[in-house]
Image 1: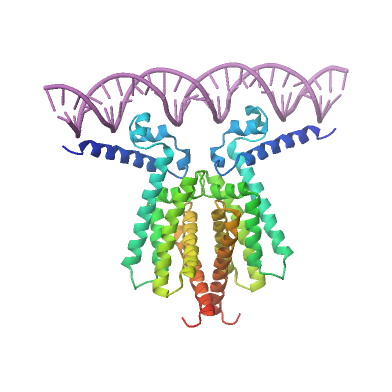
Image 2: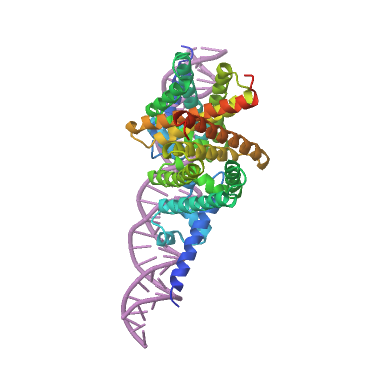
Length: 206
Length: 206
DNA sequence: ATATTTAGCGTACAAGTGTACGCTCAGATA
DNA sequence: TATCTGAGCGTACACTTGTACGCTAAATAT
């Protein structure tokens, strides 16, 4: 059978990945995980780890990529699903908060490694965030007709305000999260409205 | 001589604190520091550590407090110094970015422990951030005459956008930081302007 | 002068770490 | 069929870690 071997390897690879995600919690950051811990959780021998990843950093980068991808797809879906009807701001914020509630480990990973101790990590998270910013900026450009630079600055402010609300939400009861969403929505509206005013000042024709 | 003993103790206590701050860098987060490392840097025996702090967490909380206090005082000074003349937004952002350039370890500590693995840490950083928000909200209230809730929401958005710019700045050349400041200033103006518009809508009399 | 307190040290230990090395044996290749 | 490849394992080693315990000596209290 062709690929049976490779199939098995992929399977253990994901056992490792899942083990790492499982170990992440409010009390355990990725950088505090040890290789042995991960392999223990994955049910393999410590040295087998190296058949799949060079070191813990390589695994971590994989986690960031996978996590970021999942989140991005979710956001894109949400934006398309509600195309036209309903406020994009509200939909986006609520989708995002939902994601955080469902898989807080992923969000925490991004949050922590954004200011982590490895340049490669920070870069990887930065890249994920840029994806968000770019997608949102494009959306703003298309629907509002802003010039690129203004749209990007605005998008960036929005993405980070939402991230910030998410960070706040991590330590709260689900009941308090609705209020956080409301606050974030208000903040995004400030940004949107302010950007609009500035634009009217500079390009009165638009 | 009264207090000679206590004086010496304070001195070693600060040897420990300084040692910890020194060890913090782009590559070393607080949570990655070991007790032995800190004492080695401080030039004392590992077990002597316990004469001053219960454990590494207690030391870390002290660092957060001291760092936050220093930053807050700086910001307050800046706001008072330029009272009236010059844009508060610009002055605040630039003072903040200067602080980050001068003592990046302190800022990095706050940034990392905000999403760290210990609740006490997160709480401590949250408290520091709240100080900023409250002070800024009061300022906005007094100068702009906003109601408390709007002022707080606006202040929070501003503080976090600045923090975000700071996080970005940590990995950049000083030459690139000016552009980051400009961007942050623009984002804060969006927020200020947007909040203003919203307020006009709701309380046309003000 | 004597007794008490205590900051700092050295030793010691159990526990955990990353990873080098060589083996096995199932699956792929020829 | 026989040969080769490589995923996974077990052992082993040199380190680092936190901290318990008891000592010393200097500063303080009596």
